[in-house]
Amino acid sequence: MKNTQVILSARPQGMVKSSDFDIQTNPLEEVKEGELLIEIEYISLDPAMRGWMNEGTTYIKGVELGAVMRAFSAGKILESKNRDYKVGEYVSGLLGAQTYAVSNGQGLSRCDIEKGPLSWHLGILGMPGMTAFFGLKERGQPQAGETVFVSGAAGIVGSTVGQIAKVLGCKVVGTAGSDAKCRFLLEECGFDAAINYKTEDVDQKLKEYCPEGVSVFYDNVGGPLLDTVLANLARGARVVICGAISQYNQASFYGPKNYMKIVSARGILTGIIVFDFIKEYPRAVDQLSEWLNAGKMKTKEQIIDGIEQFPVALQKLFTGDNFGKLLIRV
Ligand SMILES: NC(=O)c1ccc[n+]([C@@H]2O[C@H](COP(=O)([O-])OP(=O)(O)OC[C@H]3O[C@@H](n4cnc5c(N)ncnc54)[C@H](OP(=O)(O)O)[C@@H]3O)[C@@H](O)[C@H]2O)c1
Image (cartoon, rainbow, N blue to C red; front, side, top):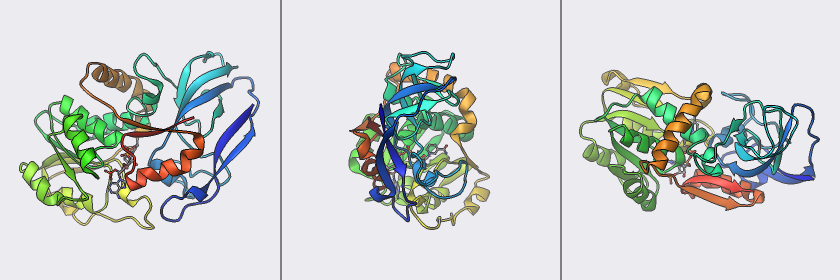
């Protein structure tokens, strides 16, 4: 059996390029005692991959040049020499951008496909959904009646954050990069208002939609947009820094100029790394699947066929050409 693998071949300078990857077909490694073989069905494209392509360590070590690109993937167990896992079970985890993975079972999650299709276990029921759930609830601590503002709102994290906040009784406003994405937020996700940050004046619209100020700001974008929202905080606001996608391809990060607004708002500026909540994932999966199955939440996916599309697909995250959770179907 052969394994098609996406190999990191160069460290990107600026925007990620197709030439940063090689697609190789290699012999499949042998499954040893304690290991299992997984046939991968979906590979997730995540903004964090841009940081993983850099040298050095942040919250996780960068991928080595010549190694299989790190990726969350999901698939079916074809062979098991590990007594904790049975052939035919569905699992997900950091299994890499490849068609087959051999794992010792550590760090894998079982995917209960009665709770949602396998692809959802890389999206709303997977790492991005967990980020939204714990980032908003544990760090943002939204209270019913408060105003929650979400940047990158049409993405899988942002759209999940906004919908959870609606279920919790908040007013929700978000930014996205196209009119179609803003319509999706209003018509499908139940947002109270949506701002196209590419064509509208965010500060002016924010003041119009949130005259009471923002009590929870869930930031996926960073850069000047973060400054705009910092200038419009309500007293006691919580600012959750989840990501800064506007900065990932920049040589140096834009630092917030308006951070003193945290002082005048008596606010809290906090960060979230989803992996810190790993032991609590099952309760979030149960809650999100209950809300999805009850029609209280929706999720949108964009699925691209063929592992060889991986390099082109990854770029879409940074140009905004993705609409919904971006996945490769292997
Ligand atoms: N801290 C954690 O543990 C954790 C875990 C998962 C994800 N994250 C972070 O969560 C954020 C969202 O991730 P996701 O998986 O939900 O991705 P996503 O939002 O589904 O896709 C990325 C989106 O970012 C927007 N974007 C790209 N460049 C931008 C720019 N220069 N300015 C403003 N928006 C830009 C684009 O939408 P538009 O069309 O709206 O521009 C694009 O569709 C990322 O920052 C990611 O790093 C953090």
